[in-house]
Image 1: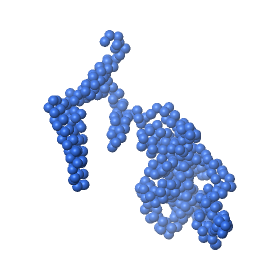
Image 2: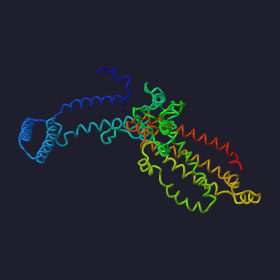
Image 3: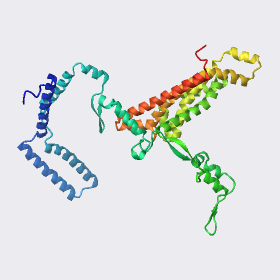
Image 4: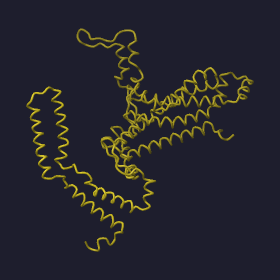
Length: 434
């Protein structure tokens, strides 16, 4: 080898290059090594004859089913061990000590060349190596969980492409787009079939000539089942919209039912003594503890996830409204009474405005908690949504896609929080200025 080969190579590079060449030679030699001898070859041939004889005996003899199964299982175990002997992959003790020492020396040389970078790697980029979990081997380290920003952007653009036939979206659903929804389908969702069944009269029947004669109940049933067309309208569609829809519906129900109950708990000792133990019984339980039970009852459709989020938002809104209502100063209530205000007017114009800051803060907290709970619920059971995408990406170790879902969730959470700050500033501008 000429002197010019390593002219522009550092001493550490020369060291690693020499070790790599030695490792290559060792690996090529190791693949050819077989723990065989003439005596071993004779024993292998004799063992093979005995195995063939046992197979022939099992095939030609008449054993009962239990005995035949035991003989086949025993023969299968013997063949498994024999194959290792035949391949020469069983080595005597300490046969690979020198090879193992060479491998350890190779890794020691790598650590030596890193120098002070070892400290940086251990602190900022932990998790090196390949980890085996059951039947799957996963590469750990910064090269896997910290992809290039350009790869993350490219994955997001591919996911955001609404053209599903051209590789856009994820699992047959766009990220965020729109679709035409039939008005009849909306009516069919709202009107139950049983409502038509309880109406007086019977459904239509076939005449003697075989013609079907529909009556008013058949026409109403067609409306209840959406078997007609009166137009369509555009509606948002996609993974992001499915997640937003679940959060918004659950949050709306939590506000609609939680705020009135919380206000009455704040002004009435009887209402508080009755509902407070019930709320405080389930409120400390983590939402994910309820998830398996609720998803089992309602299934993996939207109603189960919405009910789980409703439980979270309802408790937060009750506590917020109760705290705000009970914090109303008695001087304000007495002044209102002295001015001739009724109880309803005091509730509307004194207690509710006083509780409004706490209620809006509760909504702000509910949005964050509901969003986190939704992602976990979608990861447990779901076919659409941001949590569903992240769960599938985690299963296949698609870290670029995992980062995309994290960024989407963060941006949506930031958008919700900014919107709530704007609502708070417009609704209660006096807060923090007194």
